[in-house]
Each structure stands twice: as C-alpha cells, then as structure tokens.
Image (cartoon, rainbow, N blue to C red; front, top):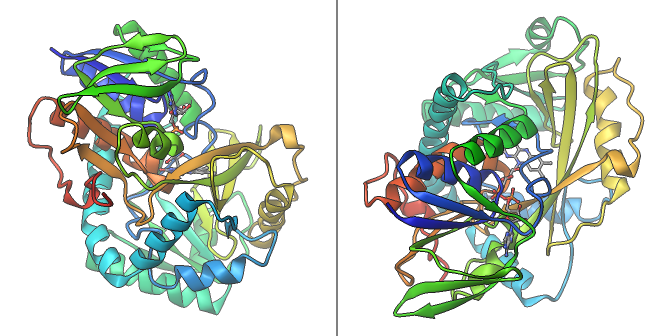
Length: 415
Ligand SMILES: Cc1cc2nc3c(=O)[nH]c(=O)nc-3n(C[C@H](O)[C@H](O)[C@H](O)COP(=O)(O)OP(=O)(O)OC[C@H]3O[C@@H](n4cnc5c(N)ncnc54)[C@H](O)[C@@H]3O)c2cc1C
C-alpha cells in the first residue's frame, strides 16, 4: 500500500482517488479551492467517444483566425506576448496536422470507450444517481458547408468503428418529439452518453470521504523538495506534506505546477461558459451540438444546459457577456420555439479546460521523477475520459500494464 497525494480535486483527481482507493492505497486529495470551483462542475456532461479528432487538426488555424475578429465567436485566442502562450501557440500550429490527427484518433477512441465502460460499471455500483443516460449525441447543422464537413467526419467515424448515422431534418425531428428543431440535418452518434456533472462530482466526493480519502481543501501546492529524482515534500500554504507517490491532476494550473518540478507541460486554459434552464416542461431528449455555433446542449432530467466557447487564455476568470450572448442567440436558430433571455452574469458558470497544444491529454508516469504520475490536459474531454484516466493512474501506481495504450499521452513529449 502506498501513501498517495493527489494535487487537484477535479474529475481527474477524484476518479484517480476512486481507483487508487479500490486498489488499497491511502489517498489524500490536496485542493486549493473548496472542491466546487474547478472545471468539472458546470460543464456539458457529455461522454463522447464520437469526439476522437483532437482540437489541433488541419483547418483549425484558419478557422481560429477568422473567428478572432468576432466578439461572439465560439473560438478565440486572447493575443498576448506571454512566452508560455507564444510557445503553446507555436506548438499548436505545428501540431495542427494530419499526422497529429492520425496519431490521436486510435488513442483517444480507445481511452474514450474504456472510460465509458467504466461509467457503466460505476452507474451500477455507486450508491448515488448521477444522471447517467445512454441516448447518443446529435450533431446538428444548418448549412451546406458544415453538412459536408460533418458527413466527412461521419465517414471517418464509421471507418474507425464509431457508429455514425447521417439523418435528414425529418429524422432529427422524429427523435425529438417534444421540441421543434430547425436544421438542415444531423449526424447521430448512438454510442455517446451523458451525465449530470455536479451530481457525479459531489456524489464521488461524499463516497470517497466515507471510503477514507482525506481531503485538504483551501490548500495550494506551490513548491516541492526534490532529491534523488523523487518528490520528497510538497510545500503548501497549510504546511509541508510527504507522500510515497504524487499525482499531478491540477487541470489548467498543471503547467505552472509542473514548472516547479522542472517539467515542461505546455498548457493553456480554454475558457468556456454554461448556463442552465430549470424545470423545462417539454425538454430535449438527446444531447446535441449546434455545429455552426459550437454550442453543446445537454438535458439533465428536467433541466437543460447550454455550454460553449473556447477562449484560449492564461488562467483568468473574466466573463465575456458578449460570448454568452453568442450562445443565447444560437438557441432559437436550432430550436425555434425556445426563446431564452440572456442570463445575468451571476447565473453564468465558467470553466477553464486544461488544453495541451496537440489536443491530447498528458497521462503517464514521469521518467524524470520516479514517484510522479501526471494526469491532466483533457481539454474538452475531461468528463469523457475521467474514469479511464483514473483507472490507468491506479494501474501505473501498481506497476500493472494499463488496459489502454498510453504512448500518445506521454507527459514528457514536449520536454
Ligand atoms: C463549457 C464547458 C463544457 C464542457 N463540456 C464537457 C463535456 O460535455 N464533456 C467532457 O468530457 N468535458 C467537457 N468539458 C471539459 C471538462 O470540464 C474538463 O476537461 C475537466 O473538467 C477537467 O478536469 P480536471 O480534473 O483536469 O480539472 P479541474 O476540474 O479544473 O480540476 C483541477 C483542480 O486542481 C486544483 N488545483 C490547481 N492547482 C492547484 C494547486 N497548485 N494546489 C492544489 N490544487 C490545485 C484546482 O483548484 C481545480 O479544482 C467542458 C468544459 C467547459 C468549460
């Protein structure tokens, strides 16, 4: 049994704690906030094996430049001369290639399906309901241009064994009997699922506490003592702590923490917003993505959550109401009978997606530091890939060969 310290209490830290506890380890989660503030709460809750193409892909650079001049656009890079952002931008540019996509697809697909199978087990085993449903995902489009892009994605998906069905507008409407949908058509991915993130996270925290996991909240790790290629001590505002093994799962902050470990983990925050409509009488049945607007829509029992925008930035918590307006204005274009007011700023949730420059997470044991495992950088897929990552972390800890390949996720690939 090892004494394990996990830096970060988001989905990745918590799922790691879950599988490590099951494997018999003593676990402490160190969290600088109150466990309610990270990226893992107000997100869209989609579990999406359909999302096997990384953010860094051909065409993203030109799309990004086009969108940068529109204050309501779904993708934006906040210009800055900050060296970390410049380095990240250069690496993103270099990795927006077909070679990166070809390398990423099998790796992401495998981890994604693995993770989904673990959610199925958790839904049966955990003593709380987290709103897990397997209803698939509808990718909706209104324009010819996006239709042709999405049909191509559907072909690639089917080629890789991810089932995708191209639907006419009428077929989409048939799947949504209670809400009028105005689209040119859609692609349906029946293998996707969804959950209610705050129920999952809060339920898991409670469960882990009962199982003996220690939580140190309002406790920020800001330095380390390293000797003989091992982390000997973590320095925090609440004192120093020693562990046999350390897991770095600090989301968007992981790049900064890694610097204190002399590791290069290029990371930028991809800020996104969400808001939730409550007590909907006639709700959407199937989660969807408005493709032109890049807005994710997820029914969570009788509530409906809208999430979107990807603003690449250093960690900052400013809410851009213009981008929230962009999300609101897209809704009646796809659901014409759904008139939604712009929510007050206090009703808007924001999260910082931990984005690596090649769109792939960093998961693996460090070669430089013997007692460090890195598990971060899941960008838009932290919910999807959470349990799979947590299970892999526990296997690595025990020296077992994980059930999925990890070479694409090497945490030291940018060193
Ligand atoms: C609008 C939006 C919609 C999304 N929708 C989806 C979706 O549908 N499906 C999906 O799969 N993903 C989705 N995501 C992405 C997903 O939310 C993230 O990938 C995921 O939450 C990242 O989890 P994490 O544990 O790595 O990071 P976080 O949840 O941010 O957790 C990291 C934690 O580490 C703590 N920490 C940082 N530094 C330190 C330190 N030095 N000391 C101690 N603690 C520290 C932080 O306080 C934080 O709580 C969405 C994101 C957004 C913004």
